[in-house]
Image (tube, rainbow, N blue to C red; front, top):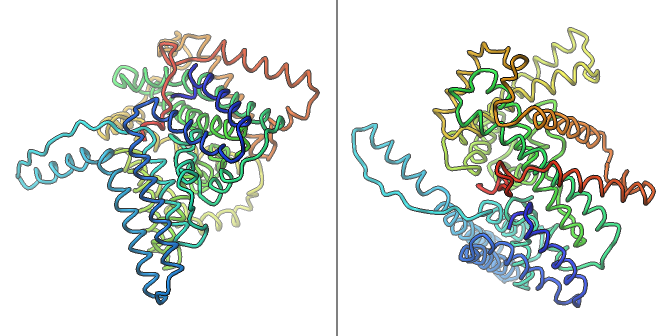
Length: 499
């Protein structure tokens, strides 16, 4: 079930109404049923995978807790707990590997053997990737680690834990929640709050604006140009690449915002997943603001266990590269995703290595790092670097990405942006193109306010009742009037559903 569908607009009020009517003791059971129904609307049989992951990590938590409370000596306890964690990770990641990486691994193996002139006839399996498997697998595994690290007690109620893994607002595309935040909230339901419901509604409206007004409109232009990058070469590709950066941001943050709003109506707070990332002044800063739940997951459960920055600079750089290469692979079974992740890792390593030189230049040239010009230069520079890496993310394969980069660097058709209306032949007519530009300006303004810690929805809520209702009515009308439900005016999938 998609957020941007009529079914969800019927589903959500029913879930909320029943949730706040039924007795407190069974609220979590109702949310569990609703969450499984929400997921089974895509493919009912894949609910078995969520159930399997839930059972494995639930049992692992109980086993770790039992070992902690045993009479075994400390060293044996640590060893046994590590075996339980390892088992949980191997089984869960094994399931993820089968569905997401089997064919990719076999293709790599076949190619490797071909280099030594050995023909390997590896089979190709017809495997459909279950929606959201990367997200709920990581969320379940984080619980195992949190219990192991004594950050949370093992949950004894299986159904409450099952709800933590499958909570429908953030089930298929995050944010990837931590047990110490979400599990505790699900265990202690709260009464209905008109104020929080109103704030949740505003979040949902903003998420819909990002997705169906902006992201889906931009997608038409980007898909047209990237779909035929030979015809739409040069500056068409430059513009499409810049727009894709906005598209993927609006698409993904749109989902996260709707998820946050939906949960808030239920009196549950989800973590912020984006913090005005394109206003970052460095690539490292960008990754502190982009997909925050995944970045922090890799930091806590991969980077730090690898040694983090505790074992010298060289080991620190190696650990960073491992994290970003794994992050690229997490996003998709393709060499281009791995290159995308590796490129962002290289950006950070080079940036850190050059920091002393930059500090020296600032001192010698008497530059003011707090000046608007200095910050703007860093913001633009960061965007260019990040946007360049998005080419590998958006292209269908590595060879295509390299061809697009070549076309961009050989671009000579600057005139197409300003003359003969050529730009309006890329899927969007003049009205839709300029509406897109206006909406991007609205997005920049909203992100600037967020960067300055101004919460726009709270500003709206603080106004008189007539202004609030007028704003909501206008917002709903604007979304209905200008929303693009995909190129064929049908609800379009969120980009991150494929991961």
